[in-house]
Length: 376
Image 1: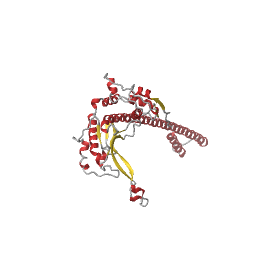
Image 2: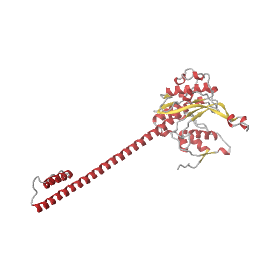
Image 3: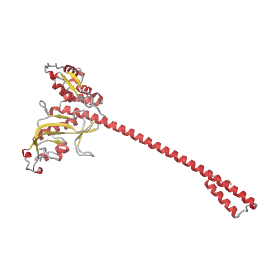
Image 4: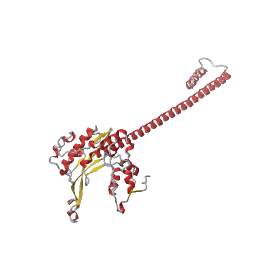
Protein backbone atom coordinates (compact mmCIF):
# COMPACT_ATOMS: atom_id res chain seq x y z
CA UNK A 1 0.00 0.00 0.00
CA UNK A 2 1.39 3.40 -0.97
CA UNK A 3 1.58 6.10 1.71
CA UNK A 4 2.54 9.73 1.35
CA UNK A 5 5.23 11.12 3.67
CA UNK A 6 4.28 13.84 6.13
CA UNK A 7 4.62 17.47 4.94
CA UNK A 8 7.70 19.34 6.13
CA UNK A 9 8.07 23.01 7.07
CA UNK A 10 11.18 24.77 5.73
CA UNK A 11 12.04 28.31 6.93
CA UNK A 12 12.49 30.89 4.21
CA UNK A 13 16.13 31.65 5.01
CA UNK A 14 16.98 27.94 5.15
CA UNK A 15 15.42 27.32 1.74
CA UNK A 16 17.36 30.28 0.34
CA UNK A 17 20.65 28.81 1.56
CA UNK A 18 19.84 25.40 0.14
CA UNK A 19 18.91 26.57 -3.36
CA UNK A 20 22.28 28.33 -3.60
CA UNK A 21 24.22 25.34 -2.26
CA UNK A 22 23.07 22.69 -4.76
CA UNK A 23 21.20 22.44 -8.06
CA UNK A 24 17.41 22.76 -7.96
CA UNK A 25 16.91 19.28 -9.39
CA UNK A 26 18.99 17.70 -6.62
CA UNK A 27 17.27 19.69 -3.86
CA UNK A 28 13.84 18.98 -5.33
CA UNK A 29 14.56 15.25 -5.18
CA UNK A 30 15.57 15.63 -1.54
CA UNK A 31 12.16 17.16 -0.82
CA UNK A 32 10.34 14.61 -2.98
CA UNK A 33 8.94 17.16 -5.44
CA UNK A 34 9.80 18.32 -8.96
CA UNK A 35 12.19 21.18 -9.69
CA UNK A 36 9.26 23.10 -11.21
CA UNK A 37 7.31 22.84 -7.95
CA UNK A 38 10.36 23.97 -5.99
CA UNK A 39 10.82 27.00 -8.26
CA UNK A 40 7.16 27.97 -7.70
CA UNK A 41 7.67 27.81 -3.93
CA UNK A 42 10.72 30.05 -4.21
CA UNK A 43 8.85 32.62 -6.31
CA UNK A 44 5.94 32.60 -3.87
CA UNK A 45 8.30 33.35 -0.96
CA UNK A 46 10.33 35.84 -3.03
CA UNK A 47 13.45 33.69 -2.78
CA UNK A 48 15.94 34.24 -5.63
CA UNK A 49 17.50 31.10 -7.06
CA UNK A 50 20.28 30.38 -9.60
CA UNK A 51 19.39 30.79 -13.25
CA UNK A 52 20.25 28.55 -16.16
CA UNK A 53 23.97 27.88 -16.58
CA UNK A 54 24.87 28.98 -13.03
CA UNK A 55 26.20 25.61 -11.86
CA UNK A 56 27.92 24.94 -15.18
CA UNK A 57 29.81 28.25 -14.95
CA UNK A 58 30.65 27.59 -11.32
CA UNK A 59 32.05 24.13 -12.14
CA UNK A 60 34.26 25.56 -14.88
CA UNK A 61 35.69 28.20 -12.55
CA UNK A 62 33.89 31.18 -14.05
CA UNK A 63 32.69 34.06 -11.89
CA UNK A 64 29.14 33.66 -10.57
CA UNK A 65 27.02 35.94 -8.43
CA UNK A 66 24.66 34.88 -5.66
CA UNK A 67 21.64 37.14 -5.40
CA UNK A 68 20.85 38.38 -1.87
CA UNK A 69 17.71 37.37 -0.02
CA UNK A 70 15.25 40.28 -0.06
CA UNK A 71 13.54 41.27 3.18
CA UNK A 72 10.01 40.05 3.64
CA UNK A 73 7.79 41.17 6.50
CA UNK A 74 4.77 39.16 5.45
CA UNK A 75 4.20 36.61 8.27
CA UNK A 76 2.48 34.24 5.83
CA UNK A 77 5.64 34.01 3.72
CA UNK A 78 8.28 33.16 6.30
CA UNK A 79 8.30 29.41 5.63
CA UNK A 80 7.17 26.85 3.09
CA UNK A 81 5.14 23.73 3.79
CA UNK A 82 6.30 21.10 1.31
CA UNK A 83 4.07 18.12 0.68
CA UNK A 84 6.23 15.33 -0.56
CA UNK A 85 4.91 13.50 -3.55
CA UNK A 86 6.29 10.54 -5.46
CA UNK A 87 10.04 10.73 -5.75
CA UNK A 88 11.36 12.35 -8.90
CA UNK A 89 14.32 10.87 -10.73
CA UNK A 90 17.42 12.86 -9.63
CA UNK A 91 19.99 13.99 -12.16
CA UNK A 92 22.66 12.23 -10.09
CA UNK A 93 21.12 8.89 -11.11
CA UNK A 94 21.28 9.67 -14.81
CA UNK A 95 24.01 8.39 -17.08
CA UNK A 96 27.19 10.40 -17.61
CA UNK A 97 26.15 11.11 -21.20
CA UNK A 98 22.74 12.42 -20.12
CA UNK A 99 24.25 14.70 -17.47
CA UNK A 100 26.72 16.08 -19.99
CA UNK A 101 23.93 16.78 -22.47
CA UNK A 102 21.87 18.49 -19.77
CA UNK A 103 24.81 20.68 -18.79
CA UNK A 104 25.41 21.53 -22.43
CA UNK A 105 21.80 22.69 -22.81
CA UNK A 106 22.23 25.00 -19.80
CA UNK A 107 25.21 26.78 -21.37
CA UNK A 108 24.33 30.32 -22.62
CA UNK A 109 25.93 29.70 -26.03
CA UNK A 110 23.44 26.86 -26.63
CA UNK A 111 20.42 29.16 -26.26
CA UNK A 112 17.86 28.36 -28.99
CA UNK A 113 16.38 31.38 -30.75
CA UNK A 114 13.06 31.19 -32.62
CA UNK A 115 13.05 33.38 -35.76
CA UNK A 116 10.23 35.79 -36.58
CA UNK A 117 9.51 34.04 -39.89
CA UNK A 118 9.29 30.45 -41.07
CA UNK A 119 12.16 30.59 -43.56
CA UNK A 120 13.19 26.96 -44.11
CA UNK A 121 10.43 24.46 -43.27
CA UNK A 122 11.63 21.19 -41.84
CA UNK A 123 11.01 18.01 -43.83
CA UNK A 124 8.21 16.99 -41.43
CA UNK A 125 6.43 20.31 -42.05
CA UNK A 126 7.14 20.79 -45.72
CA UNK A 127 4.52 18.36 -47.03
CA UNK A 128 1.85 19.54 -44.62
CA UNK A 129 1.79 23.28 -45.26
CA UNK A 130 -0.47 23.19 -48.33
CA UNK A 131 -3.38 21.62 -46.45
CA UNK A 132 -3.23 24.45 -43.91
CA UNK A 133 -3.94 27.31 -46.32
CA UNK A 134 -7.69 27.08 -45.71
CA UNK A 135 -7.91 25.07 -42.53
CA UNK A 136 -11.14 23.77 -41.04
CA UNK A 137 -11.64 23.78 -37.28
CA UNK A 138 -13.34 21.40 -34.89
CA UNK A 139 -15.88 22.26 -32.19
CA UNK A 140 -13.10 23.52 -29.97
CA UNK A 141 -11.73 25.93 -32.56
CA UNK A 142 -8.60 23.87 -33.19
CA UNK A 143 -7.50 23.11 -36.74
CA UNK A 144 -8.90 19.79 -37.96
CA UNK A 145 -6.07 18.28 -39.96
CA UNK A 146 -4.68 14.77 -40.18
CA UNK A 147 -1.23 16.19 -40.87
CA UNK A 148 -1.30 18.28 -37.70
CA UNK A 149 -2.60 15.36 -35.64
CA UNK A 150 0.38 13.30 -36.76
CA UNK A 151 2.63 16.13 -35.58
CA UNK A 152 0.77 16.27 -32.24
CA UNK A 153 -0.02 19.89 -33.07
CA UNK A 154 -3.38 21.25 -31.87
CA UNK A 155 -3.82 25.00 -32.22
CA UNK A 156 -6.26 27.56 -33.60
CA UNK A 157 -5.70 29.18 -37.02
CA UNK A 158 -4.65 32.39 -35.26
CA UNK A 159 -1.78 30.63 -33.47
CA UNK A 160 -0.74 28.37 -36.34
CA UNK A 161 2.11 30.49 -37.74
CA UNK A 162 3.69 30.91 -34.34
CA UNK A 163 3.27 27.23 -33.50
CA UNK A 164 4.91 26.20 -36.77
CA UNK A 165 7.88 28.51 -36.13
CA UNK A 166 8.38 27.02 -32.67
CA UNK A 167 8.08 23.42 -33.87
CA UNK A 168 10.28 24.06 -36.90
CA UNK A 169 13.00 25.55 -34.71
CA UNK A 170 12.68 22.69 -32.22
CA UNK A 171 12.90 20.07 -35.00
CA UNK A 172 16.15 21.51 -36.34
CA UNK A 173 17.58 21.90 -32.83
CA UNK A 174 16.84 18.28 -31.96
CA UNK A 175 18.41 16.95 -35.15
CA UNK A 176 21.44 19.20 -34.67
CA UNK A 177 21.99 17.39 -31.36
CA UNK A 178 21.89 14.01 -33.07
CA UNK A 179 18.31 13.09 -32.17
CA UNK A 180 16.17 11.42 -34.83
CA UNK A 181 12.55 12.52 -35.49
CA UNK A 182 9.91 10.10 -36.76
CA UNK A 183 6.15 10.01 -37.26
CA UNK A 184 5.34 6.53 -38.50
CA UNK A 185 5.83 3.45 -36.35
CA UNK A 186 4.27 0.02 -35.97
CA UNK A 187 1.60 1.20 -33.53
CA UNK A 188 0.32 4.60 -34.68
CA UNK A 189 1.25 7.77 -36.56
CA UNK A 190 2.53 10.21 -33.98
CA UNK A 191 5.51 12.52 -33.58
CA UNK A 192 8.45 11.06 -31.68
CA UNK A 193 12.06 11.97 -31.04
CA UNK A 194 14.58 9.17 -30.45
CA UNK A 195 16.96 10.01 -27.59
CA UNK A 196 19.48 7.43 -26.41
CA UNK A 197 17.57 4.90 -28.49
CA UNK A 198 14.23 5.64 -26.81
CA UNK A 199 11.27 7.03 -28.82
CA UNK A 200 9.64 9.84 -26.82
CA UNK A 201 6.30 11.24 -27.98
CA UNK A 202 5.81 15.00 -27.70
CA UNK A 203 3.74 17.80 -29.20
CA UNK A 204 2.50 21.37 -29.01
CA UNK A 205 -1.00 22.57 -28.16
CA UNK A 206 -2.98 25.69 -27.40
CA UNK A 207 -5.08 26.29 -24.33
CA UNK A 208 -8.79 26.83 -25.00
CA UNK A 209 -11.14 28.55 -22.57
CA UNK A 210 -14.59 27.06 -22.07
CA UNK A 211 -17.63 29.28 -21.56
CA UNK A 212 -21.30 28.39 -21.31
CA UNK A 213 -23.51 29.40 -24.20
CA UNK A 214 -26.46 31.69 -23.31
CA UNK A 215 -28.95 29.39 -25.01
CA UNK A 216 -27.84 26.54 -22.75
CA UNK A 217 -30.09 27.98 -20.04
CA UNK A 218 -33.15 27.83 -22.31
CA UNK A 219 -35.05 24.88 -20.89
CA UNK A 220 -37.43 24.79 -23.86
CA UNK A 221 -34.65 23.65 -26.18
CA UNK A 222 -33.99 19.96 -26.42
CA UNK A 223 -30.48 18.79 -25.63
CA UNK A 224 -29.54 17.95 -29.21
CA UNK A 225 -30.64 21.40 -30.42
CA UNK A 226 -27.74 23.25 -28.82
CA UNK A 227 -24.20 22.87 -27.60
CA UNK A 228 -23.84 23.74 -23.96
CA UNK A 229 -20.32 25.15 -24.18
CA UNK A 230 -18.26 27.11 -26.64
CA UNK A 231 -14.48 27.25 -26.65
CA UNK A 232 -12.29 30.26 -27.20
CA UNK A 233 -8.64 30.13 -28.25
CA UNK A 234 -6.45 31.87 -25.68
CA UNK A 235 -3.26 32.13 -27.75
CA UNK A 236 -1.35 30.48 -24.89
CA UNK A 237 0.79 27.64 -26.23
CA UNK A 238 2.48 24.81 -24.40
CA UNK A 239 4.89 22.03 -25.28
CA UNK A 240 4.16 18.64 -23.78
CA UNK A 241 5.83 15.26 -23.39
CA UNK A 242 3.14 12.62 -23.66
CA UNK A 243 5.29 9.66 -22.67
CA UNK A 244 3.59 7.68 -19.87
CA UNK A 245 6.77 6.83 -17.94
CA UNK A 246 8.71 9.44 -16.01
CA UNK A 247 6.23 10.39 -13.30
CA UNK A 248 7.65 13.13 -11.12
CA UNK A 249 9.45 14.78 -14.02
CA UNK A 250 8.32 17.96 -15.68
CA UNK A 251 6.39 17.30 -18.88
CA UNK A 252 4.82 20.64 -19.89
CA UNK A 253 6.28 24.04 -20.74
CA UNK A 254 3.90 26.92 -21.45
CA UNK A 255 3.62 30.64 -22.01
CA UNK A 256 4.02 32.56 -18.77
CA UNK A 257 3.33 36.09 -17.63
CA UNK A 258 6.91 37.20 -18.25
CA UNK A 259 8.39 34.57 -20.54
CA UNK A 260 7.04 33.06 -23.75
CA UNK A 261 7.31 29.47 -24.86
CA UNK A 262 9.99 30.43 -27.38
CA UNK A 263 12.45 30.94 -24.50
CA UNK A 264 11.88 27.45 -23.07
CA UNK A 265 13.13 25.22 -25.89
CA UNK A 266 16.42 24.37 -24.16
CA UNK A 267 14.54 23.49 -20.98
CA UNK A 268 12.15 21.38 -23.03
CA UNK A 269 15.04 19.44 -24.57
CA UNK A 270 16.42 18.87 -21.07
CA UNK A 271 13.01 17.50 -20.13
CA UNK A 272 13.10 15.15 -23.12
CA UNK A 273 16.55 13.92 -22.09
CA UNK A 274 15.40 13.25 -18.52
CA UNK A 275 12.28 11.40 -19.62
CA UNK A 276 14.31 9.37 -22.11
CA UNK A 277 16.64 8.34 -19.30
CA UNK A 278 13.73 7.17 -17.16
CA UNK A 279 12.13 5.37 -20.12
CA UNK A 280 15.44 3.66 -20.89
CA UNK A 281 15.88 2.61 -17.26
CA UNK A 282 12.32 1.24 -17.21
CA UNK A 283 12.91 -0.62 -20.48
CA UNK A 284 16.17 -2.14 -19.25
CA UNK A 285 14.47 -3.13 -16.01
CA UNK A 286 11.60 -4.75 -17.91
CA UNK A 287 14.06 -6.57 -20.18
CA UNK A 288 16.03 -7.78 -17.16
CA UNK A 289 12.84 -8.92 -15.46
CA UNK A 290 11.80 -10.67 -18.67
CA UNK A 291 15.19 -12.39 -18.90
CA UNK A 292 14.90 -13.52 -15.29
CA UNK A 293 11.35 -14.74 -15.96
CA UNK A 294 12.40 -16.64 -19.08
CA UNK A 295 15.39 -18.17 -17.31
CA UNK A 296 13.17 -19.24 -14.40
CA UNK A 297 10.65 -20.66 -16.84
CA UNK A 298 13.42 -22.55 -18.68
CA UNK A 299 14.67 -23.92 -15.36
CA UNK A 300 11.16 -25.06 -14.52
CA UNK A 301 10.85 -26.74 -17.92
CA UNK A 302 14.25 -28.43 -17.49
CA UNK A 303 13.36 -29.59 -14.00
CA UNK A 304 10.00 -30.91 -15.24
CA UNK A 305 11.69 -32.69 -18.15
CA UNK A 306 14.22 -34.28 -15.80
CA UNK A 307 11.41 -35.26 -13.44
CA UNK A 308 9.43 -36.83 -16.28
CA UNK A 309 12.55 -38.62 -17.55
CA UNK A 310 13.28 -39.96 -14.07
CA UNK A 311 9.66 -41.03 -13.69
CA UNK A 312 9.76 -42.79 -17.06
CA UNK A 313 13.01 -44.58 -16.13
CA UNK A 314 11.54 -45.69 -12.81
CA UNK A 315 8.36 -46.91 -14.45
CA UNK A 316 10.44 -48.70 -17.08
CA UNK A 317 12.50 -50.35 -14.36
CA UNK A 318 9.37 -51.52 -12.57
CA UNK A 319 7.93 -52.86 -15.82
CA UNK A 320 11.15 -54.72 -16.64
CA UNK A 321 11.36 -56.16 -13.13
CA UNK A 322 7.71 -57.21 -13.40
CA UNK A 323 8.32 -58.86 -16.78
CA UNK A 324 11.46 -60.61 -15.43
CA UNK A 325 9.50 -61.92 -12.45
CA UNK A 326 6.72 -63.10 -14.75
CA UNK A 327 9.30 -64.84 -16.99
CA UNK A 328 10.77 -66.61 -13.97
CA UNK A 329 7.31 -67.61 -12.80
CA UNK A 330 6.47 -68.99 -16.27
CA UNK A 331 9.71 -70.98 -16.39
CA UNK A 332 9.12 -72.34 -12.88
CA UNK A 333 5.59 -73.32 -13.88
CA UNK A 334 6.90 -75.07 -17.04
CA UNK A 335 9.50 -76.95 -14.99
CA UNK A 336 6.88 -78.05 -12.46
CA UNK A 337 4.55 -79.11 -15.25
CA UNK A 338 7.32 -81.13 -16.94
CA UNK A 339 8.10 -82.91 -13.66
CA UNK A 340 4.44 -83.82 -13.23
CA UNK A 341 4.11 -85.12 -16.81
CA UNK A 342 7.30 -87.15 -16.47
CA UNK A 343 6.14 -88.52 -13.13
CA UNK A 344 2.86 -89.61 -14.69
CA UNK A 345 4.01 -90.77 -18.17
CA UNK A 346 7.70 -91.48 -17.67
CA UNK A 347 8.98 -89.02 -20.31
CA UNK A 348 7.97 -86.33 -22.81
CA UNK A 349 8.42 -87.66 -26.30
CA UNK A 350 10.12 -85.34 -28.80
CA UNK A 351 7.64 -83.86 -31.24
CA UNK A 352 4.70 -84.80 -29.07
CA UNK A 353 1.95 -82.34 -28.24
CA UNK A 354 3.37 -81.90 -24.74
CA UNK A 355 6.86 -81.26 -26.15
CA UNK A 356 5.47 -78.64 -28.59
CA UNK A 357 3.57 -76.92 -25.80
CA UNK A 358 6.69 -76.78 -23.57
CA UNK A 359 8.70 -75.23 -26.41
CA UNK A 360 5.96 -72.67 -27.03
CA UNK A 361 5.74 -71.84 -23.32
CA UNK A 362 9.51 -71.27 -23.12
CA UNK A 363 9.30 -68.89 -26.10
CA UNK A 364 6.65 -66.86 -24.27
CA UNK A 365 8.85 -66.73 -21.18
CA UNK A 366 11.79 -65.56 -23.29
CA UNK A 367 9.66 -62.82 -24.79
CA UNK A 368 8.74 -61.60 -21.33
CA UNK A 369 12.32 -61.72 -20.01
CA UNK A 370 13.99 -58.26 -20.45
CA UNK A 371 17.39 -59.87 -19.81
CA UNK A 372 16.97 -62.07 -22.86
CA UNK A 373 17.59 -65.25 -20.90
CA UNK A 374 16.74 -68.14 -23.26
CA UNK A 375 17.73 -70.97 -20.98
CA UNK A 376 14.92 -73.53 -20.41
